[in-house]
Each structure stands twice: as C-alpha cells, then as structure tokens.
Length: 286
Length: 335
Image 1 (tube, rainbow over the protein chains, first blue to last red):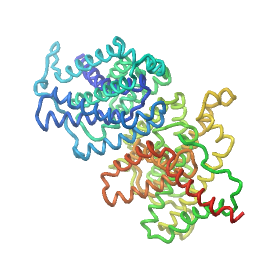
Image 2 (image 1 turned 180 degrees about the vertical axis):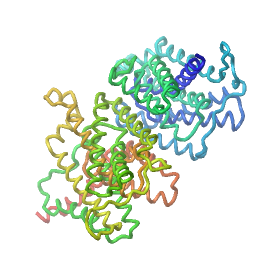
Image 3 (image 1 turned 30 degrees about the horizontal axis):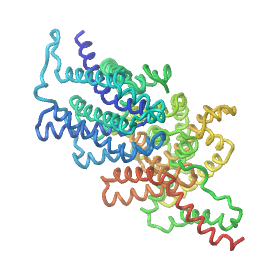
Image 4 (image 1 turned 120 degrees about the vertical axis):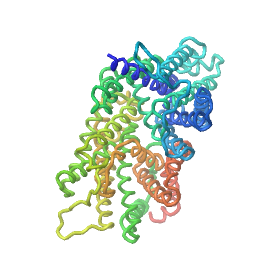
C-alpha cells in the first residue's frame, strides 16, 4: 500500500512537470497554429538559467524560477518576432525552422555551461520530508504538485474566463474578422507566445528538482511533451493536464511493475491512444 | 514553398546544352575522385551515401509533402541489419547484406506507415518522431543487436562481393557506392516523372481534390513512405560498411536532421537539389571538423535557419539560374 501511494505521488509530481513542459507547446500549437519544436530547448535553457541563479550565485529559489522563465520567454519571443512571424500558416516551414533552433540553442547552452550535467537542486527550505499518514515523503515533490495545479488553474482561467482568451480563440477561427473589430492580434499572439515560452522556462527550473539539467534535455523533453500533447489532445489546458498526469503515472508505475519495459510504456500508451482516438482524449479537432 | 521542376521548357536547347550537365556530373562523380587522395575519396563516398539518403527524404517530403522526423529509422534499420548479420552469423556477403538491409528497412517502413499514416499534418510528424525514438530505445536496450560491452555494433567489415582475389581499397568502395547511387537516382527520377509522381504532387498540393478525383490518397502516401524507406535502407547498408560502426544514434532524430538540412539547403522537390545539399553539408562538416568540431551543430542549425528564411528554393535555384544564363548565351550556337 505504501509502495502504491508513493508511486502514485511520484507519478503525479512527474506528471505535473510533464504538464508544465507540454502546456505551452499545446496552447501555441492548438490556438495559434504554430508548431514550436524548440519548446524542449527553451525548457532546458530555463533549467540552466535557474541552476546559475540558485546554485552558482546561491540566490533565492523562487527568483531562479522567475529568471529561468523570463530568459526562456524573452528568447522565445525573439524567435517569434524575428523568424516565426513570417511563417504563419506554413506548418512545414515552422517545424523545420524551430527544429534548427533546437540545435542552435542546445549548442549555445553547451558553449556557455559546458557539457557537464547538473544535478538536481532545490531550495534548502523545501528539502526535507513530510509525514503523510505515517509515510515520509519529500516536500519538493509535493511543492511541484502544488505549483503544477496553480499554473493549471491560472492558464485555464486565462483561456476560458478572460477577454484575452476569447480574443485568442476568435483570432484563430477568423483572423480577418477579429482584426476588423479593431483588435491588435499581433500583440495578443506575441503575449501568448511569450507566456508559453515563459512556462517552458519555469518548467525547466521546476523539473530540474527531479531530473537535473543536461544538454540532451532539449530533445528528450520535446519528445515527452509531444507525447503529452498527443495523449491529452492539443489546444486546451485541461488536455495537457490530463495527458501529463496520465503519462507521468504510466511511466512511474510501468517502471516499478515492469522494469524491463520501462522505456517503452510511454510509447505504447501513445500508440494505443492514437489507434483508439487520434485527436487525443480531450482533443478539440485534428 | 518553391516547387515544381526548375527546368525551362525552352525549345531552343541544343543536344549539347542538355548533355552538358550530365557530362559535368559524370566527371565530378566518376572521374575526379579517382585522381584525389584517399581521405578525400572517403569524404566523396560519404557524400554519395548521404545523397541517396537525402534523395529518399526529398521523395517523401518534397513530392508527397509528408514531413517525417523519423526518416533515420529506416537508414539505421538497414545498417543494423548488416551489422547483426555479421555479428551473429559472420556472413559478410554483399549479395545477402544489401537485400537483407533493404528488406528490414522496408518492413520497418511498412509498420511505421501503418501507424503514422492514420493521422496527418502535425500529428504525422509527432508520431514518426516518437516511432524513431522507440526504435532508438529498442536498439539501446536489446542486447541481441549490440556488440558485447557496448551500445551498437563495431567492427563491421567491408562487404564480400564474391569475386575471387579481390581486395578493397577506398576508390573501389567509392565506385560501388557510385553504382548504387546512380541506380537509386535513376529510379527516383522515373518515380518522379511517372503518373504516380504527378499524383503525389497533387496530394501535396490538395489532398481533398485528389480524393474527389478518385485517388486513394492513403495508398499513394503509404507506397511512397515504404519506397523511400527502402531507399534509406540502401543508404544505411552502405553507411554501415563505410563507417564500420552502427550505433543507436543512427536511428535517432539527430540523424533524421541531416537529410532535412540537405534537402532544404539544396532545394526541395527537385531531383538534383538534395544531392547538391548533401555535397555542401558533408564537405562543410569536414572542414568545420578541422577548425571547430564542437561548434558544428551551431553552424548547421544557423545555415538551416538562414536557408529556410531567406533561400527557400535552396542552392539549386541559383545553379539553375546560372545555367540558364549560360545556355541562353551559348545555346543558340549549337542549334
């Protein structure tokens, strides 16, 4: 029972990192129609920046989270303003362009931080164990679950309950009509793209508490984030949350129940979902 | 996307103008390497192997419009087939290795095609990516396809052609690759210019329209996916012999990126573009490995981004323009 509870919490906390990594990708893809393969690289960049602030300079952990998000957000915004802006409605070119940026960002990170992987790090205030019904459990993982839930609620609120979310959805359905109503769609898409990259950077620092940071992370995280988006369905916050937690649980339980199949359970889940419901569990449309 | 054949259908082209590119290509590929030192010959060999790989990717991306991030799966599968054959049975015959490699790549392509062509657009991309990574982790974990104590298969020997008292040297292997390159290139040329090729380009432009015209578009996409898998398998087999080592890296997305770069930089949807792109990438990689090997991904990524933003048609567009200017000036003399 204790093993089960531990696996459950581990799975949910890992799933929250996956949700944070996948949500920005999913929103940008489903709402703005941009496929940003550099999303995983932005996650990695956030992780490295967070490490520099929290460990190298020994500053506050929350400042590190914010700095990681900000740097990733600004780099993402730069890519969008200079390059992606010219490639709207050209999915193949967007994919190729952002894939090129995976290589550029990864190599620049190796240049700046070196090839040495960074260990997991957390705020000293958060390291330690908490008793849950007699089971000691690390506080960092509980904190990750809490952050994931908060971000999910904020993003959901932005998407479904604000004027901004309504503008974004309207702009995707009929760009001409929306701009005709006097709405500056350019500025709104800039903000959405920045927000998505910001969340990726935050996810990098949060995820570094579980997995550390290393230079292959850009492609690794991209892959799991894409799987999360496929499983959950693209374009909605709820979809990524469900997909992230589901994949986190499948991966964690798979590793403890069938260790020899550990690397394949995630892919199997994805293939089964695709064969049964290609648009994902909560997918809006293909 | 600048597509279609960048070929002028001007009637004033004399026979010499049409033959000259072929002769120039023949000299550059057939005669020139024999005169060069052996390390340049091996770069030339690598270039031709990747030219086969890039041409196969262009067939599926440039013509059918299917952007796959897992094309290296077939390349690696071909290489692994040769490696496993040698590891477990000691058979080095080329006449068994090549068909086995191509067959393996084709079978993998059939399986991947069945799964990934259920979906289209972005989802297709994600699924091909995930399937290639799945193969990567299979190759990483399955001891049977690894040499003892390492990840991958090392010590793959050059193929046995079954000719008595024949010993390999760099230029002989180069000519073997050249023969296969010419065969593949000719086959791709025939596919491009067949009704099948035209139907593929129709699907790329508007799949719904082709369906309304009564084409089974799924079948067309499936066939081209499998055919390009087989071509990538040929390249993989040759690469395994050339590199003497095959590792999970050659199944993964890092290897899939190379033909994408070659096709985009050379010019997609053209026959010769991927070959030119392969030449540029392989040679620039060689020179950058002399100067700054660790900055190579940065150079590659940068060149790739510039090509997509500012030179969408690829290098081939400029070559064709130069060629047309030359043939316009001198072409009329020969007529």
